[in-house]
Amino acid sequence: MREALELAREAAAEGEVPVGAVIVYQDRVIARGRNRREVGKNALCHAELEAIDGACRA
Image 1: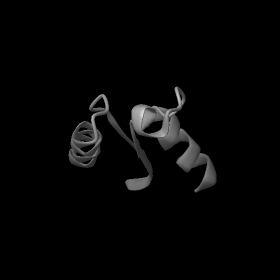
Image 2: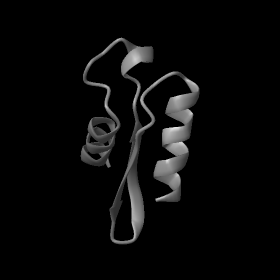
Image 3: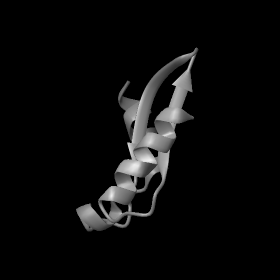
Image 4: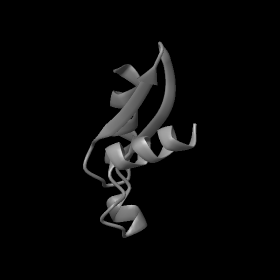
């Protein structure tokens, strides 16, 4: 949870909606993401989608 909150703070610092997401598997963080919708000018750059994408690549 601490890591998700830190990711949310990073997003907020860039003018994004402050959301962070972390995916944990077997007590290990396998993926993380934060909102980048405004910075990336992409409606799909939500924290949870970035985290899911990262988990699929792990």
